[in-house]
Length: 135
View (cartoon, rainbow, N blue to C red):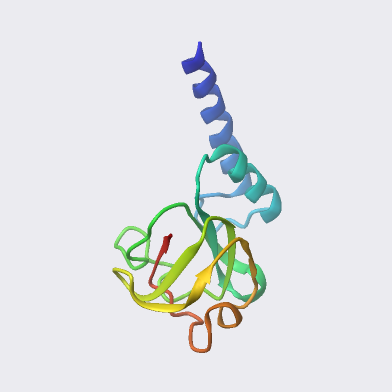
């Protein structure tokens, strides 16, 4: 019985993600706050950060739940050196200039809204993040 419940919940979540535009190319979600709320309910994660392409939480965005050693990986490289604002929903995160967690940028960020990456991580950090990890 629990397996059926889990399958239904997963199917409902996939349907919700589709309509919000999560994981669809060139889609803009209708409401980022609704998306964040749903993700927090559905993902049992101890770490969650959202990277935004532009300052002020604008442009494309990427949800990260675990260590991301290379934002320039072959299957998903859009956010390499393209992050200008950050939302940390859960956990504490470190950000790095190079892949493999080399060249730590600024301080470790805890939960909060960081509308300009240079205000959070220091001068020269805009569009420089290539890897990140929860600590």
